[in-house]
Image (cartoon, rainbow, N blue to C red; front, side, top):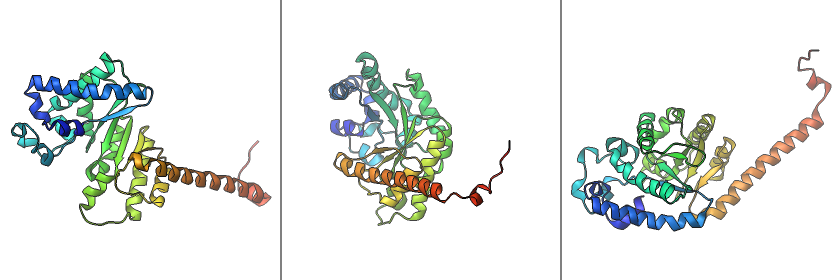
Length: 276
């Protein structure tokens, strides 16, 4: 949704007080998304709710309507403070899914920092008539270190998938400074993937500009990572890399099984207790 607001050069909070402009904006977004959803048919589009920061919002039409009490918030926190902002985008979703019968569009909530935020956002979504089901999935996007620290409680509160936005997480950790993917960070990402999986949610790796080295990616795959969101230009190479990791995993398992089969002796078996 960020792109739609930026393209229209309009502030979401401004639209709430301008009914005609709001209707026009919603109509334009629906007109843009409808043919895309029809073209993709059974493939799913993930609509990310907006998370424009104050720097962007202050440059858009209607910047005088910005609530300065919440200017430090974006994404989930902003929606909790002003549910109408999310309802504006839920209206777009409702038109596409209900009126146009295009069910291949799901919702991603950005900047989820705590379980409390997620709970309140889910209430807003439910009050608008949306329920998580086989045809409607809800994603929570983690973009800040605070969200990573709260990950266990976030997934405990039931969510279909959790997107780990590696670019935003690393930028928030290091700012403009150069950094390397240390073993500690790689291990932490592996823990995050395992934590999400163990709570019956799906982990999703999102990266657009930061390259993830093969060792880190392999660790995350071994912990259960199976879904990726990457730029189109990187799609082919990303698939090749993950395929090579998976082939290596399968080969190691097969070799280990063969070694066990060949090396099993009476002394190996005697280490176990048998009962009749």
